[in-house]
Image (cartoon, rainbow, N blue to C red; front, side, top):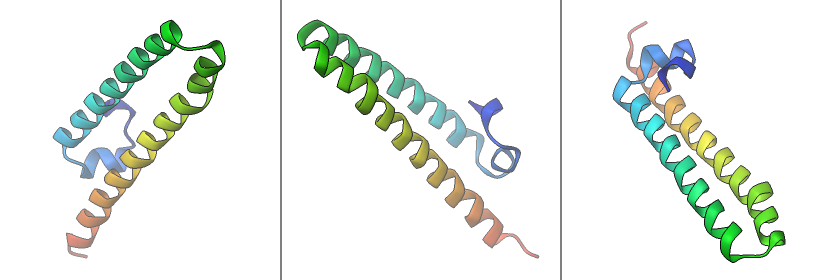
Amino acid sequence: MIRYITPIARQNVPEATMVAAGYGWAALMAALGLTNLIIVLYFSLATWAWFVSVSAVAAKVAACALQYAVFRSIVRRRFAQSPG
């Protein structure tokens, strides 16, 4: 995950936080994959199409927004604490 982070975040966000975010993304992808499998096996094609096109995309957008907000708050807090 660290290689995909912007340089300013890499310099100011603790490495443990970036690693935790990477594990969070991995967990989200695993959960979405398992949910996809369950929906494919037990629900209609229309339900699966809705899940893939709306729910899975919305979950990824929400996770991206959450990560952005957390990283941004950490960087802003670091800048506010730094002298100068």
